Amino acid sequence: MGTDADRRARVAVVGSYNAGYVAEVPHFPVAGETVTAGGYEEVVGGKGSNQAVAAARLGADVSFVGRVGEDRHAETAFDLWNREGVDATAVSRCEEPTGVGIVLVDETGENEIVVVPGANHELGREGVERAADAIGACEVLLVQLEIDDEAVAAAVEVGADRGLDVVLDPAPARELPPEILERVDYLTPNETEARLLAGHPPDSDVDDTTVSERLRSLGVGTVVLTLGADGALVDDGGERTRVPAPDVDPVDTTGAGDAFNGAFAVALAAGETPVAAARFGCGAGAASVTGFDVVPSLPSRATVESLLEDG
Ligand code: RIB
Image 1 (tube, helix red, strand yellow):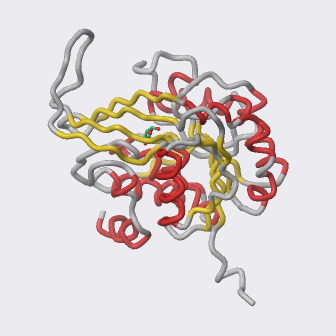
Image 2 (cartoon, rainbow, N blue to C red; image 1 turned 135 degrees about the vertical axis):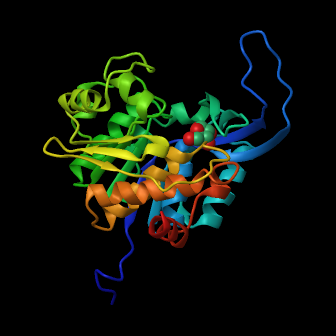
């Protein structure tokens, strides 16, 4: 029989799958402008699925809860989860088409994304509650906002009721009711998402500390503000800790947040402190931006550990 030390961290992810259409552009088009892409690819994506794959690559047992259509994109998704060892038995299907993400990546590696939610917005309370036992078997629940509000609310309820650490990546940002925020143990916004949730314009120059204090006052336990190349700020109300990120040359920043969140959840599920988990997350985020596209550049544990040792 296995001991606790043998047991792998268990992470449940409730979220989206999107088929991805990615174009490499010299610059982002302004209104009315047509830009000619230098390259184009059809890829797998969606913040939920990306985070599930990120966690599985880092050695966790992962259950993914989501909804896809009855189309070819859904078959590609099941192949992905099968290949990556993500348990997708709690993924349901519906008549709406599988979600789609249209991604532009410019020459500096920055991205712009348009999401067409499709089946992701059909997950609903029922799609989550039928997976309650699969979620309850995990230590950490990871949720994002590419699914409908009912599904997000049901996920954090199940997670909190079953005693999991609930991590919410509020991406893409939208206003959230207190019933959701009060059940969140760790909120992991990036800088623009944090400002929007705190009631400021996304490009406001209000400082990070004020933003994280405001977010904590809305009821979340710990705010883990992700700062890209500048690492992360962990604010648990008692202490605020800045966590540096390893220095890398970015090629494509799409999915850096997914790599961060997947890694953060795995480290928490393994019993690490939030600050250590954020450090692991920063290592995974940095590794992920060194390659083009999201899933192909989600790192292994060995890659993250060596980057953190060197950086
Ligand atoms: O975080 C990156 C992801 O956001 C992409 O895979 C795209 O599908 C969108 O969901």
